[in-house]
Image 1: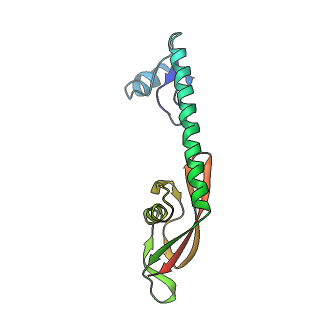
Image 2 (image 1 turned 45 degrees about the vertical axis):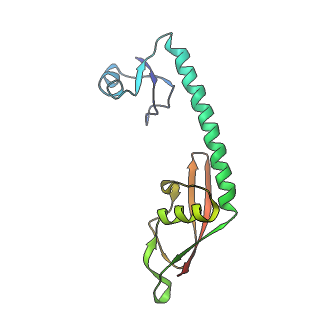
Image 3 (image 1 turned 135 degrees about the horizontal axis):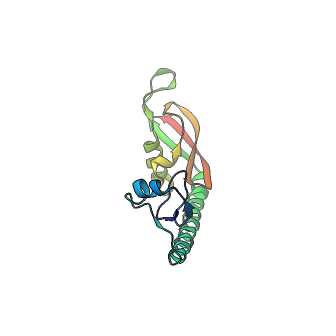
Length: 148
């Protein structure tokens, strides 16, 4: 059965794609969850319009992400935290802390979920974390943790 996706479906396709799926998959999962509708001759134009709109949104989102990346990459983010002897922090620096510090120091707003690193920063010093604001825009953030 040919269908048009209303939303991105993992393992199947993106919004506006025309896909071939089993009747039961459409009837039992895609249709009840409003993820797709049947493809007819009249729906092909609607699917094409959905793809064009998604491409425009994607381009605008990528441009915004690249703009934020140029601002953040050129600066080092400093976070003050309490530490004990040996430079070990009493707590830890999390993705939320980094996102707040980026907003305060550069004015660029970054979602904490876009900051990718293993666990938490638990020591004083410089650490480089990765930020992925868009599937095609990934950049490093230099985080300097200093003693408060």
